[in-house]
Image 1 (tube, helix red, strand yellow):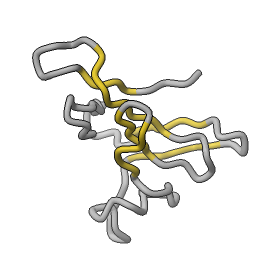
Image 2 (image 1 turned 30 degrees about the vertical axis):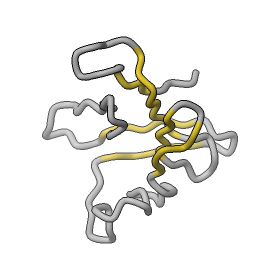
Image 3 (image 1 turned 90 degrees about the vertical axis):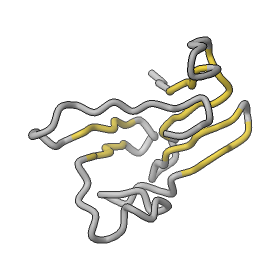
Length: 97
C-alpha cells in the first residue's frame, strides 16, 4: 500500500495542499517531495544509516531510523530509538518535511 504525506493548503486550512512527501520505490530509496506533479526536493539515496543528500546526516550521524526495502521497492521506514517517544513527520504548506 502506497502511503504519502500531503500538506495542508495553509497553516489554518487543513484541505489538501500542493506538496506531497513520499519514499520512492527505487532501490536505494530516497525521500521525495513533489509540488503538484513536479519534483520539489530529494533527500538523496538511503545509504544504510542516512540519506546522502542531507548534509546534517554525515558520517558521524547516529541515525535512529531504519529503512528496510526489498528488490521490488516495497519497504518500511521505522524509528528505532527506544528512549524517546515516537516522533511525527509532517509536511508544511510550504513543502518542508
